Length: 210
Image (tube, rainbow, N blue to C red; front, side):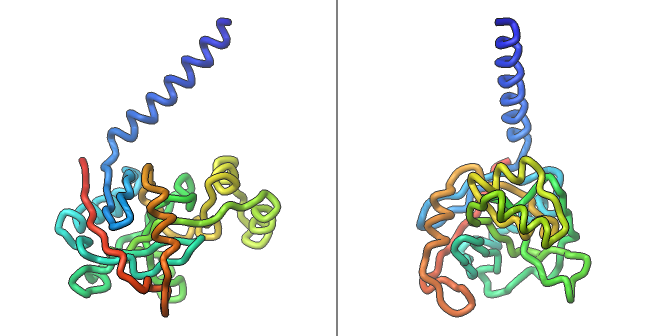
């Protein structure tokens, strides 16, 4: 009985600590005609966090669109509503192994390694992982091809909620969706044309909550 009480206390303490940590994170709301996508920005990626906050508060994203959408992969946006693809600068990479590409991960788009070996991020463009669910055999094969090893946490996420594991370690993940996964599903399912651009514009506004 004592062991059970200690276990319950430990679980409660961990849950409370997680909530407390999230309370210290800046939150975002991406509003679309399909509903709201809500999440948090990671404090461990301060340059991406602060840049995203700056652009959102300046209204850079308001009225902009998800210009590239690939079902079972990701939804990408961040080009300015003023027609500019980016604000004219990049953000240094803040790639951390603890933050990976599970469904709902908020990450920064960037130019390819050939022209961007330091993997610096776009000044404004981001994507939200839609992804797909993988089985252990597929993950094992991906490990062999890439020479990497997925943690227990990664395997649990990729075999349950899904994601895009092949992007891990190559792009900066700087936030995570907490609510609105159904909205991601709806946007990912829209009809697209050349360049994976939705036939009908999917516009957004972004609000920051501190």
